[in-house]
Amino acid sequence: MSEIVVAKFGGSSLSDSTQFMKVKDIIMSDPRRRYVIPSAPGKRFNKDYKVTDLLYLCHSHVEQGISFEDVFKILSDRYNEIINDLKLDFDISKDLKEIKDNISNGASKDYTASRGEYLNGLILSKYLGFNFVDATDLIVFNKRGRLDSIKTYELIKEKLSNLDNAVIPGFYGLSYKGEIKTFSRGGSDITGALISSGINATLYENWTDVSGFLMADPRIIEKPKHIKEITYRELRELSYMGATVLHEDSVFPVREAEIPINIKNTNKPDHCGTLIVNNPNEEINSIAITGIAGKKDFTVIAIEKTMMNQELGFCRKLLSIIESNGVSFENMPAGIDTVSLVIANSELKDKLDNILDEIEDQLKPDSLLVYPDMALIATVGKRMNRQKGVSAKIFKALEKENVNVRMINQGSSEINIIVGVENSDFEKTIKAIYNCFISKTN
Ligand code: ASP
Image 1 (cartoon, rainbow, N blue to C red):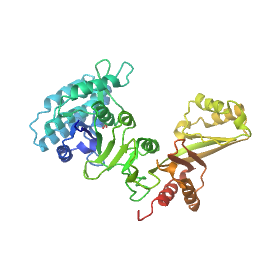
Image 2 (cartoon, helix red, strand yellow):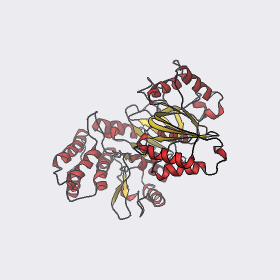
Image 3 (tube, rainbow, N blue to C red):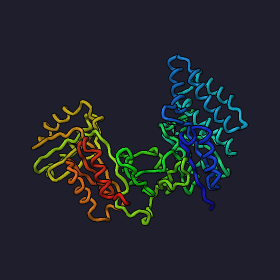
């Protein structure tokens, strides 16, 4: 069977005619790239607007009874400029007029937002000479507003298998009622994943403006090493801690179908990017860790009670206190007589005093301590569980830097070690961990 690559291009990859030209070169350089998913035009420079944001603005203007003429003109001009610069023989004015009329007649927010991808898809299909297949013909949602994956995959197979190529706009599909429904922001990644899975692609390429993942945040570590390959599980751990390039929901369909994702840079197409796989290629990387990521602003509630382990229902009662206060927690490291709850400050808001009172009343702990303004830092690596001394190395490095570790947690999968430190030690901790695994000459 011949290989199929599905290529999704993000907004920055299709923000103007120069970017369209790069995309065409990429598609034409590999005949396996048969199905292309575009986002709406993104920012061309820092203070520029994304077309999707302009469309949302049009919709809210109509809702408030304000004219959206000027905003619509900005986005129409952008599409016309792309078409003119590419010297395309394509008149988009009819489509723009129809969309404008629909918006002014009260079209839904989802319909309005989806037009950014729709128009970009029309232009890209003309430019590439590819078929245009609307996402509403392929991606469908059920009565409860959830993706109907069975029907979606059936439609993708049925409608795309006979086409040599197609451009399918990202970000939306068709609701049960036959109306346009969008995914959450950044959702073109999901469209790409669904098409990849439905057509049983060999590879899902996700083209953006960075060459994949870095081992640490470049705002903290100067020129961090690039991650060549990462497993889905490692990616989950790192993106949970804030290292995001992909929409979270886009991972599931391809992971399930065992299709690797390659994050690639439209501006540096020869760079290998980052490959996300189920089964790692052991030879690729010998460093014990894959990446480091962290988040600030947590509160740790530390509880100690002698013989806690023998007290039936202790943790259940603790968790029901948290639940009844409408708070969710991130982590719950436990010892024999101790248990801590790590909660994001944004979750806790003004509920902390009430939670502490209820813990005192119902659980009668020997000690109850609160550490505010904590940061969590995760060191992630699939090779960690097979190498000795990884945690010793981390803690030695932190001791040397005089960082006070307030909490330690290792997930049962043994692919991460999470430390809790004070917010003020956040950057220092990441630097210390990074430097103890990556020598300057590495
Ligand atoms: N254009 C949409 C957004 O800005 C979807 C996407 O780009 O993936 O969120």
